[in-house]
Length: 66
Image (cartoon, rainbow, N blue to C red):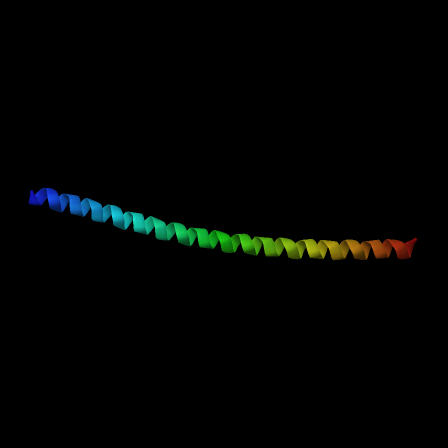
């Protein structure tokens, strides 16, 4: 009976430790992915702003030339 109890306790403890580890790693990965996505969206917005400014500059240049 004692061997069975120890085996079950060890198995349950191992399972809980693994579950906690994967939950922590999952949360950290989710947080990193969120930061990466926010950074990418910021870069994309900056790029679109530069493109818009360049487009406006080229339109003004075309108006001056004609």
